[in-house]
Length: 233
Image (cartoon, rainbow, N blue to C red):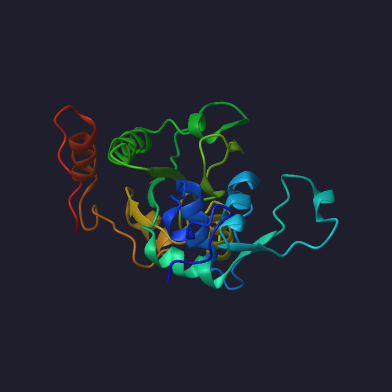
């Protein structure tokens, strides 16, 4: 099924989608109510609407909440679900936070974590993600899924400690970021991989069963010149 024609009379299937549009469709397809993630830029969602892949659900006057509102405004259509099944899943690499942090009260996540394991994991994930359209997020034991630009407070907490971010919060964050339906690879130890599995049960964890020295060697093999391809478990 090719979907409804767009304004030019072409089938929706023939119109290429951007990376965020594909991610938004996949996230909407697995959402209980079919909501499109609010983080997808309005112009890109409007294009999906023109293709018949999503439809407006926001009540009149919802714009009073402003552009940063997380209130759902669009939901996927049956044509959108068909299109999502035909589109590749977005790729996501997840790296852990670190106990080593900048000695400041608040900073962007991309600057706050300075621990050697995090830095190596992040470099490896960036190298692996560079081969295609992919995203790298940090999994914080306290704050959950973080983009580099997200400003966070200094804290001391490890995954598994009392106060660790809950699976429910992680699931909501994953939807908001458009990665709730993604091909996920975790470059971290068991505690962080287990936490990530509460959102993505089928994730890949190529470091499973390895010691920390093997983790660091694995990372180095990815970001150093002549690196090898990420092995599948």
